[in-house]
Amino acid sequence: MKLESKEKCVDMKSNAIESSHWKCKMPLTSVTSSKPIHKAVTAAVLASVLALSNVCNAKAANWAIEVMNSSESTVVDTNVTGRLTSHAGIFARNITTTWKDNRVSAFSLVDLSYGISKNVNAVVETQFIDKLGISPRPGLQLNANVKDSLSIFLMATAGLKLKDAELVVLLQHRLSIAKGISWVNQVEAVTNVGPSDYNFSVQKLRSGLQKDKFTVGVATDLSETNSSTEIKHSVGLFCSIRF
Image 1 (spheres, rainbow, N blue to C red):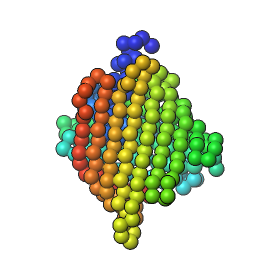
Image 2 (cartoon, rainbow, N blue to C red):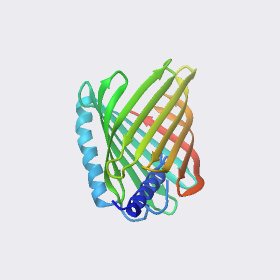
Image 3 (spheres, rainbow, N blue to C red):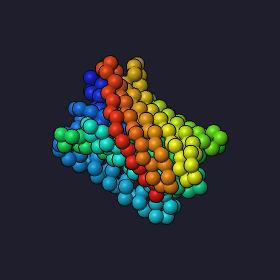
Image 4 (cartoon, helix red, strand yellow):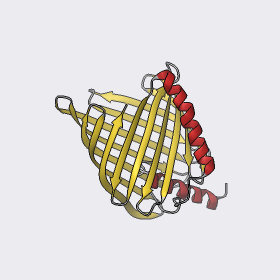
């Protein structure tokens, strides 16, 4: 891949993740449009969802949906986690952003993981990015709980298509404040670097009250790219449900 085309792909990916996010999460401008999402990407995502649905029926997966609304956009973040075997798992996520000017962007991924030791998994992540297609990323995951109130998740992957590296960090702290009610604070950050330079990063901050399967609170999404010194931000309210 020529350097120029590679840099263009990185810009498209950072835009797609940024606009679909959560910032991203996992924000935007050039990638989004009022036209439907690329047919090939849509077909791949639908195939993954259908395949995962069959797994979920057999393995009792956990689903979660979050809606975050700000003055610029509405973001719907859907994910599902399931078990394939006692050591193998699957995780799928789709983040769709609808902007106030009716532009729509999407970012999706599917992770296949296999436990290799306590709290450590080998993973193959496949990302589905509008106008870029499918991007496979092998790597490692780490899960850890500290005193039952703090959860830590780390994942490092290498892009076989874009020749980049990506680090995902997720921290969640839970504090019981009343019977059946918890105050939950969460930070999710994605950092992407290329062979010689930093590409982009996105952060998703959440703070809210959880009761049973429902969580409501305030949300802040941040994003930065190598091509700009500006830190894009979006502040709003979110509501999520797990089932």
